[in-house]
Image (cartoon, rainbow, N blue to C red):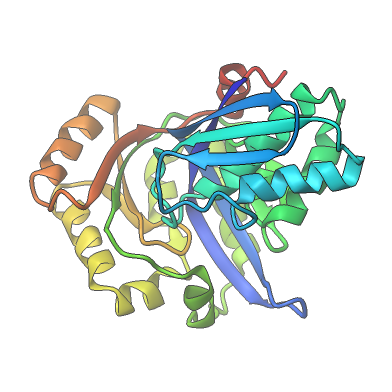
Length: 296
């Protein structure tokens, strides 16, 4: 079985405060884009094997896809069959694009089919929430708002096309570090995200761009010059709505159409070293993901 797990970007990310369980309460607006890892799953006689084309990705219990397999095994007492998973990694690791979360989400889908578990959408969501804050959203992707620690997801019935340039500098930013150093904004994040949702439904592209926000961006760009440089490059080449995604270090800019995005991506590549990864991507809907991965 072949599945694809897609990268996500945060069009808005507000932190409300720290919870008793150590997580932060958030309000966020997310969109999947057509940058994807290819996941090949094969049933075998016994055991669990996870491999990846990127050698820095762990292949043991530290891997979220591996954790997804263990969770399914323990929850449904599956012991008499094995599974092999290979991840062809295209999404940069630890980039603020939910690559690992997407791998885990699609592994859940794959196991549901391969082992004929018959799990409902609600059951998959409950399992995903045990694996990570972004995993429930990554099960279905598209445009959605999320709250709680990220596991409470409301999908939005909007399919406005967006085109993005992603710049991923060759640095690592710890999510834990970013959250520890954020200063909580006193504005009403729920109202901010609701306004963005309204702008999406109205097709107000300029209004949406003017309200892009990420509470984690200021501490990260203050500490990491590469993030500031990425932002500056995207502003210089004329992209709109420049913002860091998640806890970084990936920064995105919005373009009006695909041809302009591809042209601008080539221009950006000419300005950065080969170690920097630059992508021209477009939004992908929940329906398109479902069709691509045969999830229906």
